[in-house]
Image (tube, rainbow, N blue to C red; front, side):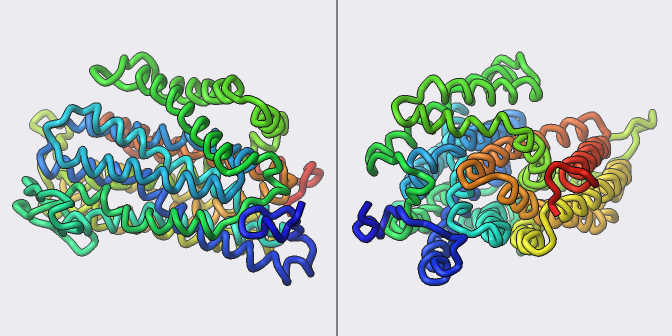
Length: 542
């Protein structure tokens, strides 16, 4: 192939392990793609996670939905994003990196605009908001394709650092969303084109404190505001990124690539909608399945649909990608990545809930000695003021984890952070127990936040170390799909953590949620040691 002709988009000659090639050509191209990828991924995380903040403000504005109905919006976005990561894990090989990142970034415009429209109409039925939450899942799916794309650009010695930068700074989308959305809702961004404000009926907040009831609020900007970044980013992805033909040999052209991406993302809505309908309570769904049955059903259905809908070279490409499931290390690293990224995204979603419920009320016994949790705590901390700190720390420590792992080995770093997470989870559970039985729970808030931040920091470092391990164990053909698959399954943490913590809070035993997580972390610590650190391990890392 004439590489000069295709150098602006398609690169046929790519040898990052060749030091001369890397220094003369590879480094410049790789880092250009990385630095375009980071803000695109950040916006993906922001759009995916925005319903966690939007639903809080919908309550404050008096939207006519119950808390249970509003919860379905967060659940739908979480499940959709995780499920869309499964086909996204295979998109780079089938459609090319530049084609995939451009189109999936541009796709975020639809839920951003749609969300801005429906939020101006509180009288509209719940299903219109649920459709937008479902569509927001595109942002969650983008992580798998983004990581699969960046991995082959870099030599193995820089895998941890490069993937840590992409994922870590991309994960800042969670923090960015938690800070930016409360801010843009305080102003008219687009004048008369942006719609009229609504009035807060309850106090709200942002990172600088309380926003009083009666304040005009442009909740629609939670969606519309992302247009300011998504439009220029889409243009930048289209003209600035590359397809590596060494990884994506059968793209077939730009339009066929776009059709493959659109088909696989559209197909992913089918098992998501079916699984949600069976899981969610009436009247939204049937309420027939619990969480632990609904998620495996969705995952297996998604994989079967991928095989059934594939055609031509796409079918052959998927068959090669599915080979990762016959490798036991795919499954061990999936569990280890649930420890790290699953915890990060799950706690990001659950922390506002935990702050609001545990510290927002004075927990006092009634005349019979039964604990009551209905008396509002006048000294309660605002969830919107503090919830962003943990995700920020987790995102910033992720590149650090990749960098350290490049130096000392990924598995030893994973081992250390797993031990830290076991201890921190047990300690946090005990603090939650004390706070939930106290008339003045705010006295435990500082310790609560410190322990949560420690969990976020450890999970962030572990994100980088796990991806470093994947880059070492798998070759370039399989590393991308494995990165995508592990991130897809771990993303279900966005749904699991809020449900588990919420259920335990409802049962009056919030500490049990953290104790359960600690047991899981301990089991994965043993798993990591057995496969990658013990004397005689098949793969020592180091």
